[in-house]
Structure formats: structure tokens, C-alpha cells
Length: 491
Image 1 (cartoon, rainbow, N blue to C red):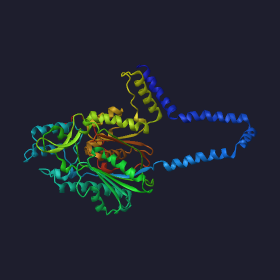
Image 2: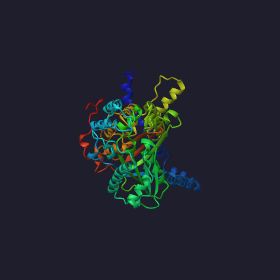
Image 3: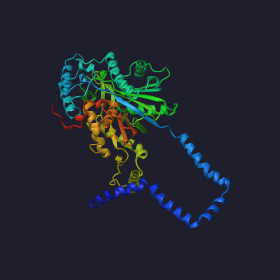
Image 4: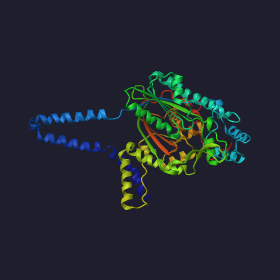
């Protein structure tokens, strides 16, 4: 087996070329045979056969393909494009090094009503050391006070700071007027005030009174791709050239957990402030990416999947997010379901054939020793943006998909520099790839997001025009990346 493996690897490129270009490989000999046959018949006999054709046959031969082509063009969904995107740029004053974070956590233990204790602080210290986060992640201004402000006013201030900054940058980059935006989709899971986020944005930018707007809440870290899919659906039934603004964020201020349940302390250590705004359109003019696919997978019908990321109160009445110990197993199952759905849509024929043969062999021979073939998604995508939910999430997906360290570099570096920014993390990763100058015209990008419910959502993009000025949120630090991230960070 070991001696044949190198031979199989050498034959695989030839196999991929033949299968992926099957029609071309088949068409060439057929065309040659047709030319040879016509040459043998001779021009006079060929003309005689053509004159023998009835007019109705000629009409049908011309009309039917033309009608089929026109019908296809009319029925196919409109292409949706990403005009541009912008991420919230954190400020040095928001930075929370490990030492500051842990010092604040220790002082919270003395606050009346809080039950967080020294044991909880030691637990959070171990989590931070293994989290993959760096010393420059940021928390909202309200969390820099002791005790942290968790009231409505402070929460609204964070919202306005993050989303208005991102939208301002996006409008400046695209040059579009707020009046030209037809749809507005915003997602934030844990904070849904009245008036809503969409109302805040419409008021700030004096948008049209007939703008269609939606605020998604409770959808978790994968809600950014849910918003993209919803905006795509809106645009495909709107007049051509319409625009949709998508804003993704998570409000940290009201969600600091002051209890001592370990499963609920993890979000304190991982989640950081961040947000992104993206402009979608059905017009290709000035577009930078084409949205190829959006595939959503929901496993919420299963009780363990439904409760694996669950907002609740602990025994002492402190509200927080409980991350179940089976989260990684559930995420892996959701990923498998999503891969099964998106694979046939994006993988080349060679990979689909190998996967089908493996599946048939396992069913026919009923032999569990035959391992299922894992498709090589590197054949379908040049870049991968995996939700930076934590080191364990990135490790699991890297192993499951057989990706190299370079493929997951954007995810690890986004986690290190910005932390888990929830649904906006995918945009920080895309910005990293562009800031490093790795994006090329025609490159394909796979975004993978995970969220409560439990959801695994995917979006596939194709680059039309790489960014000319791709610094964005990485402007002041991209030259220092990538950095080595040890298994345990001692500070």
C-alpha cells in the first residue's frame, strides 16, 4: 500500500485533468471524426444532403436552441456582487492585555452581587493562556470601568461606535450615497433594543423612508452569512442595480458574566468588540467579488445541538452564555452536513466522482474499514475564512478539511489580533488575506461560520478585482503578522 501511494499521487493530476475536462476530451475526437467523415463524403454530396432537409427541420434546429438559451437566461437567478466591505478599526484606548483583563476580573469579585471568585479567575487565566488571543484585543469602553457598565445607555454607545464607524468607512470607500441603498440587514445576537439597530442606522444616515430593513437577533456567530443570504434573496427580486447594506456585529457591553459557572466564563475570555459592513448589489460595476453560493445547515431539531450554545441564568441568577462541553462534536457534525450540501455545488467533477465511489463502496460492501473519502476542497478554493471562534474550532476544521497552516493563517491571526468578534470575524479574515497581498483575480474564497441553534453556514465568493488599498483594520499591524502562537502563552 505504501509503495503504491506515491504512484497514485503521481497519477492523480492526470486523473483530475481527464475527469474535470471530460467534455473537452470527448469533444476533440468527435470533432476530428466529424471532419474526416465530411471529407470522405465530398462537398457535392454534402450539399445535396443539406438541400434534402425540410424547412421545418432547419427552423427547429435553429429555434429550439435559441429558445432554450433565452429561457435559461430569463430563469436563472441574478448574480449578486460584493461592491466592498469595511471592518471596525479598534483604537489603542480599547486594548485589554491579559494582565488588565485578569486584574479587572479579580476586582469584580469584591463587587456586591457578583459571585465570581478567585477560583474562577484562575480558570480564566488558564483559558486565556490557551485561547490563541493576543495582547491587543479590545473591549468596549464600558468594560474598562470597575464594575463594568452593563446598562442600556452604555450598550447603545458601543453599538453606535462600532457600526457607525464601519458604515462610515464603507460609504467612503464605495462613494455610494445612503439614498441609493434599497435594503438594510443587520445582525446582532445578544442585544436587540427598541428602536432597533436598523432604525439607528436609518436615522443616522437619513436613509429613504421606503428602505426595506431587517434586524436579526439570536442567530449566533454564523448570522453574518445568514444576513448575506437574506440580502441576496432581496436583491434577486428587486430591480437590477439595487443595493443592500449588510452590517454584522455583537454587542459585548451587556453580556459580561459575573458568575462562577465555568461553561459560562468562556465567552468572557474569547469575545471581543468588532463589527463589519458590506455593500451588495446586482450591478457588476465597481464590484470586487461575486457571490457564488450560500449554503445554510441547521441541526436545531436535535436537543443536544439546540442547547449546546444557550443563554440562561445560573443558580444565582447571573445571566450568561453556556457553552456545552459537546460543542466541538456538534460543530463537527454540522460541518459534515454543510460539506455534503455545498460539495456538489463547488467541487470539481474529479473530487465528486471519488466521493461517490467511496460512498458506494461503503454501502455495497458494508465494510466500515473503508474510510469515507474526504474531498479536497483546496481544488475548489484558494482561500479559507473559518470563523475565529477559538483555537479549538480552527484546529478542528483544519484537521477535518485537511488544510495547511497557511490556509488557516487568516483565521488564527484574526483570533490573535481581534479575538472572537462573532459574526464579523469572517470579514476581518478576508481583510487579512487582502492586506497580505495574496488575493488574485479569479481566486475563490470559502467562508465558514458556526452559530447557536446549531448552525453551520457557508458562502463562496469569486474575486473580480483585488483591493488596491487593502490595509483596512490591519493597517497598523499587518507587517508584524503572521506571529507564532504557542500552545500555552506565558505572560
